[in-house]
Length: 213
Length: 423
Image (cartoon, rainbow over all chains, first blue to last red):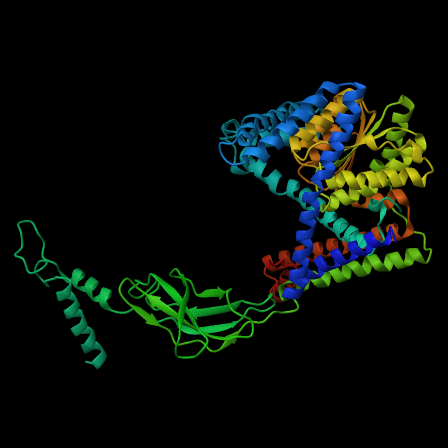
């Protein structure tokens, strides 16, 4: 029964959502909505599991054993408790310590991480655009055209050419035709994959995600 | 002169007097000041238009919205003759509703000029309603004739999605047919997916180097099908690491995913007879925050130096942060996602990438389970159907564009069939 109960729950939940897509009757819509709310509640309640895992690993394993980088565990726990305590004691509204920490610490740390992307994109682009074979050369050419076509310089460089050869026009064509074809092809293939996977899960054929074949 | 015209002229004269306009003179009968122009014909006409009531909305029809969940009645009408034409002074329409014809009409909403339809979403199913559309200008209102009776009801099928239903049934029948064939023992050929072949190689390399394997199941929640696909792949990865006795690190961004991953990995270790090799501390919840998670995983890569990094699931902007750090750390990397915007980053920074559908096919491919492989074949047949539909559609649209008239009607039917409606 340990395996059957999750499979039955999966079948019922998946089938109701599928039927809800085609049947607008309140009887089905309410059941589907109720199930979605349950999933939200389960997911929200699961944060306790996350906190438990953090405490177990950092407070009872990494810090006492002084594993590599253990001082970071102290920073992590201090940050977690600081946010929890300030939020619980003073609330999370405007002007509260929680809000202050969120806006002046977390947001900026997030932005710092996000900003790193600029450097990573540069290094990844350098590798991607190295001319090693004809495919990479094609990629490089397309990239140069698109990059130039998106800035005023590209327009300036090709101003005297016929309209169809001007870089902004060629850029639009690359983005709207070859790029869009690839994009849509991947999307359609992925949609088929989702449908097949969904059917396998609802019917209990795919059960590896439960920890077995 | 008709009675109607006579009344109009009298009303016009009264109104012009009430407005203080002395036709051919000045306001309120005061003598003209130097430089002041006498009010002429246009002022007279304006006063006339202002006092003339707008034409009524006509042909008011109310009916239940088909294929909906109930409580909705659609009302349509023909605009007033003074809306966008004629006096062009209609400022909007009031929608009035009653449960009895001829009386008790109450205002339920108003719509701007130019509009010719409205959906009443506050109806009670089974109650009969009558509607009036009241045209209004700045001064006056005119009611339409009441609509016929209309009652909303809840339907059992969303008719606008009939095409999707047909395609879904067709697709499911393909999949189920091949699964049935696979159950009967028919050999099914599935093309090789290099990215999946590379997974075992990567784990083998990590084992040889005595380093851990890092598996990141994305930052999607458990209700994201990419995460479910990722957990299925994790089962197979965990079995291989269990057999090779390589440490498997699974950092997660969602607590439920962490809980599911714990179960998946534990079961996998049990199934290959290595329960003691399972280390629960390797399945870690890091943070729900996207960049905090990325920073933490990068920290793991740089401190614990895994030799194989596997990224499978739903990724957003953190994809390149992870993949580039992994690249710089010298790990062999295999990624898989259906997030189209992140694929270029993974393709650039990783050694192998499962593109889109390959992520969903991975579990079937790795397990070689006939039923799962059957579903892959069914999925392939679905793709063939889509390809044929695209080619036929392109041919028909091209023919219509070049004026092959006989195909116009067929092209319309074809186009409408593949049109995806909203609600």
